[in-house]
Length: 457
Ligand SMILES: *Cc1c(COP(=O)(O)O)cnc(C)c1O
Image (cartoon, rainbow, N blue to C red; front, side, top):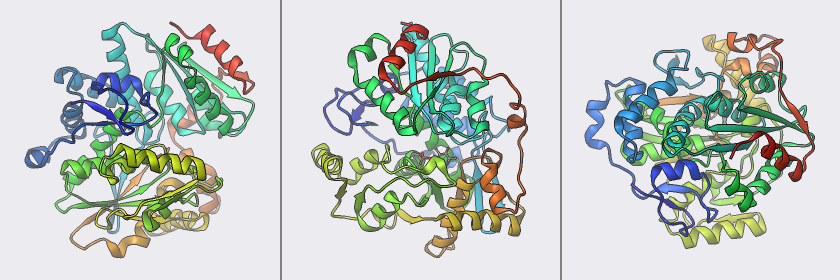
């Protein structure tokens, strides 16, 4: 299997090269040149555990790694989860909640980043290569990325976050990690400043090559691949086809569901749920993709206007035509809007935006009706499921994806539940731990000097 760029101007890459490359050099995103059809395997895969199914699915795409090695990496990746089955279902009436937050940092990003960390370790080891990972975070991504690579000999990781804008517990999830290859940078600026610093650093190709810069944001194909597994697993768990409600920010999570559906897993529809940053919900209902101002909500992991994985979906929607894709993207870049002639099929997708009041109400209702405490991101999915329920046939099972443990977002939970909140031992254990963090100005030369001094070549 080869990996091609959506923009069509990158020579085909192997899986291992795709994992190390992240964003394609032509500015596009990497996709496999074909999507395997698994229809014939479904019956024999129904009885597999999450981890065993993960080995099967990952092996199909990672065809340049020995299947026995893939098996070992998958075992190691998911050994860090708190529950044996990696993920869990909780029934709330006619909706099943698929909990993906039982990993080390209590967010669904662990499912992908634990495996990506193991893939990096293996590939770099075989090639005797090193990587300096540089990333920006507003919360969940940084801690999950650090948890994926902490202690690895061939990797240094530099995570930037805006000073004072990340919740104290989320900050401690990063800064309390004692491993010497972890470098937390508190940037005196906004999240945009952090992200711009990262983009400018990666644009310096000489520096990028010299210091082997690597990325862990959701444009990495291996992250999508790892996420395909829970869609596959859930679709085989029930005797009816499954529709998913997916709280969506960068379109990484729901895109994995789209790939799983294309592979032939029994998936009916994908219900896209955004918060008030509704650019994707508007696209799926009107065909127009138009940027608005970012609003800050109780679901910060979804406060995104331009979704980095959307380009992958668009590529398929435009019949894998890189020229049409480039025209769309350049129109969007210059005017802030672009549209498609044909709407994505309503047989595949539903979409809606959930506002702040509806999010809090969904937390309250799940608690009142079922005694279940949902984190605010999960609540966006629950609210969307309720709203779009009428579109889900009685011969389908509706599954809501739970993306974070509620203890990660105690303020929003308390706001919805009259001051009640929940805790998690992994988070409580962080309180009072010593923090290691470097304060820097949002200045490219300062960042470069830091990577030069603390990274490795
Ligand atoms: C990252 C994240 C999301 C959004 O996922 P995308 O892949 O960006 O759509 C939703 N909820 C939580 C808790 C997250 O951390």
